[in-house]
Length: 203
Image 1: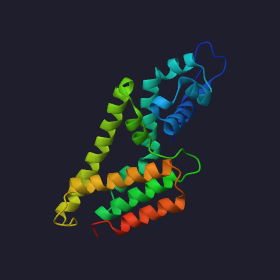
Image 2: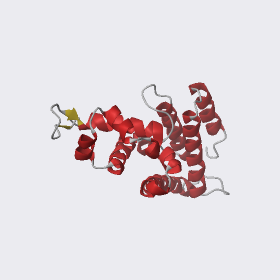
Image 3: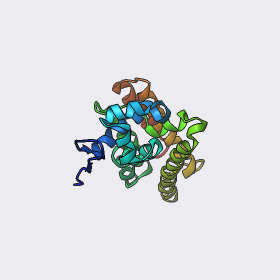
Image 4: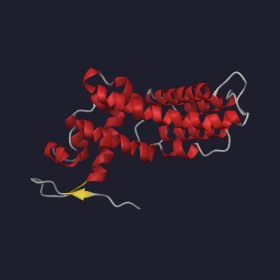
């Protein structure tokens, strides 16, 4: 188990836990997006001063990148596990049910941090938007690669290829996140997952 990293920045008499502070920053970015999260929002949630934030994490952009790393490592870990499922349908089911559990957790904000931040970033935050899009593409490429194996195994219908199937599943996952962010209930999200699996085009 990793131990939390704690530090005592100059000018601050008591220590604070960097890992815990980063977790709080993640929740702010997740609920408000990159641009919607002010430095005051972040320092209040993290329980530190601005000088401490800069000393421990760098600027707001660097803090967001670290929070995005944490988000992918802890909140999206089910995605890499899903790719090990034996069939394309099983991959889809694991991803959809994993997303459902994350979106309906009582302890986390709703919505997808990568979706929220990619659509909310304006010109002044283009580097963040580009970073988020690049990470999404990496995930998409991994899913396409997995579905290419399914295609080679004869799982996909003749009229469909791995890239199209991957795009369809990603659209379902993003729709699930957007519905959750808009306040959909667990029951409503479960129906969306079950319907998606009912019409899923592979066996």
